[in-house]
Length: 177
Image 1 (tube, rainbow, N blue to C red):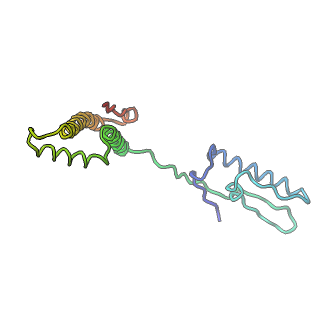
Image 2 (tube, rainbow, N blue to C red):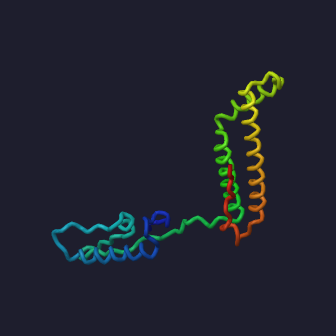
Image 3 (cartoon, one colour):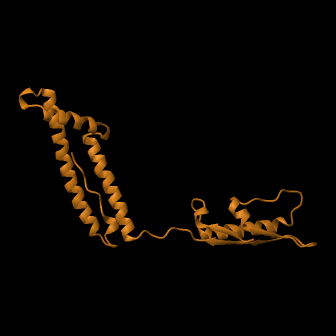
């Protein structure tokens, strides 16, 4: 049965031509080995090459070796424009969230909002310095969130405008704090 070899099976640095040449070199080595007595059979530099060679035995004649494989190109097709845009959107969301995480880590947001709501529920005359810090923290975070949302919204519009010619050169915006 003919061996099916997918291009994804090639080892680093190998390609279809290199593989085919390696198989032919191995076949020549095996044919030369037919004249050798008392030594172990040579092995290929890679197990896939060994599998790609078929041994044909005929009584009273030296063994013949032939290539018996077919290469199947399983290289994924290039991404479509929409797939590239979806990837850019994902990268943008990740960058925006990472920038927000620098301002106030996600694991602290809930506590910060509870403290903020408690501080706002108090009359201004009874708020402590701690209450004021809780209010200022959320106010600052909201300011950054609005700033980052505007940057991301502009980037989303820019991504929507990308073409096949421009999609690969688009750069993520900077979310500065």
